[in-house]
Image (cartoon, rainbow, N blue to C red; front, side, top):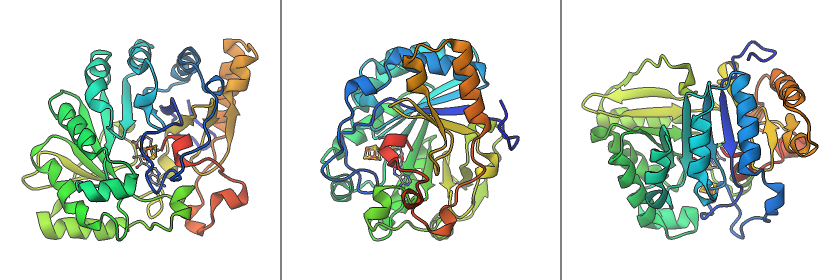
Length: 330
Ligand code: SAM
Ligand code: SF4
């Protein structure tokens, strides 16, 4: 379906938990977070019911996220059921990779189309400092498991000044001989990222660093509308690609095709605003599918035009977005 600004909405990110086994400095407080009671989290049946309505409204791609989605029990069952929905062309996962080695086989057997692995460093010490956990080896094992499989693999890295600047070349080099995409994502001013004092690194700076080292980055034309906002490039001699997502510098709100469903069942229609719909309330009030679909469709139609991060204002202070990234799912 189209929203009020004519954007075709076809991609849903569904968070299946707000819990996590890492404590990334830009995402979660060290002490962890107040646990939401299980009863407040959508059941897999509820998620599936909403996804079915999404698919009828034109959603073609679903990404499962969190918190750490691999902490959710029976995730592969959900993947299988989502893949069976008519209209859903892709079901993918964003994960920190800690549990990937254990779960990759069953997720792939269930039909998972791709994995985005969040990996900000290839240095064990930096990893431990940034994530406040010592699971680096497990994540690398998970990555290796993916390389042996026939599915789309992307590495997501958030470059942080004074933290992983030195890792950018090493991470990019993973795409030299592997058919993967290594993507650099601009730090967004949400929750802990703002409070931690961490600062991102502008994408043009990363781009020229890569060109200096690997030679010209040749743009890759993307024809698939489900591809998302990343711009991809390929240095000569690379089999994989390098991607850049700079939501702040180059606003891509005009072509935003996504909505988000939080683990607590809130349909969030923009990362930067609280706009959306309390879907859980409707689900648990025994509202029928037609009414639910109408309300969801109305919320999607009113998706906000664009974020206002460029104003340098902390969203929460304006009452625009109170949720942290681990509650939204990235
Ligand atoms: N736990 C999973 C993971 O880390 O892949 C999924 C959830 S996590 C919230 C999804 C993505 O959001 C990760 O790639 C993470 O790096 C990114 N992220 C978290 N906080 C961010 C921020 N403030 N700015 C940009 N990306 C952020
Ligand atoms: Fe957990 Fe992902 Fe947030 Fe890191 S970025 S704390 S792995 S939810």
